Length: 309
Image (cartoon, rainbow, N blue to C red; front, side):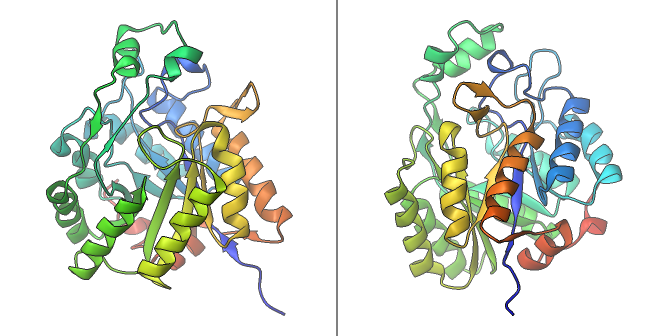
């Protein structure tokens, strides 16, 4: 009898998009981020994707020192795979964005595969009274371009690749898949590629089922059996797209970075709650969760004993 397929759940626990005024459940302090990651891992996430924040006002903080307190705690409490962002926030320089992963040498780092308009301003309609001025300025900015040029992508690859860190390639539109194919053909990345297709963020591809199918077809044509597919649906799209992708052979990313919600009008109380819902989808389809070590094997990771924290 054939063995059930193993599905990797990634949980992105805080990110740099949502702000503290939107939900009291969004992790901000190092202890909150650590607890969120450990809870997500216990609920079934094989990978936790991590950003850091200023504990005073919740603003994104991409200093290596901000990551150190929770990285050690997570490693002591869990065997989950740690993925450190190189996206940071769209307003940061590439040097700022790469420093935490360069310093801490995780098994996985995220890597955005193209520049794009980045529109957060519609969120102000739902959350019109932020507590902090930085939130209002950040969310209201209609001129953000998330800069990920070919030179910047190459800089991250050549900085982190020699450290044994592999990548979660975040692709917000079809062109980003073609950008990744360029780097594969140039020999700067190697299979198996872990491709995270992102749906529903303003400035990227939409969240219609046709969009999901289009990205999957394009990736299949470009990469064949050289990649592992995962999906990220923003906001209300999180679980519908997760269900669609799991049924199509993909992996799933959830977490409060991508969506604050557990259901219509219902804020998620924790990252673990979203992981649990994703797990129910996976097991309802007769599939099984990948353990952290199974994820390491699937993605050819270096192992937790080779990180710098």
